[in-house]
Image (cartoon, rainbow, N blue to C red; front, side, top):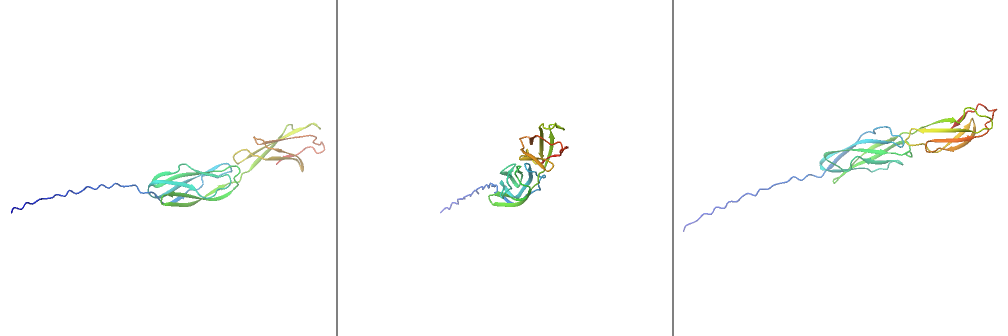
Length: 202
């Protein structure tokens, strides 16, 4: 009997592997120093960097309370990158934000979880300057004279509140500051015997 040999050839399958980008994993987040002294009504900015591994987006946030009137925002959010994600944090304040030093917590989050670090917001105390002028340098007895106090502040915005006018230890009256930071008071009957009069506004 004749035997026939059959050769079977096996063709190796070609397996192609596609690299899938890894999800980002944040190992640390750092925050720089405050950019400048922040007066009430101003703002301060900070450089923020998250480092780790992977190619994905990172979300930044401030997770602690800020002082009254202060709000936080980031230049970009979320941020795309590979192993290094940079951002800039800005904290804006209002005239109502009290002076002081305020630690705050910043967080960088990925699908693997968050990392945090602490920054410091310093709000400097504001000061005001008051100047006073009169409608006349001299007054005829019995005629009214109007005093104007102009108040400026190192803080942003126009000062508000009241001004008390005094002649030495004698209070002449109180007036409210207008939208330009000025208050006026009309006075009648400054005495001749007490002349000259040292008018103050505070």
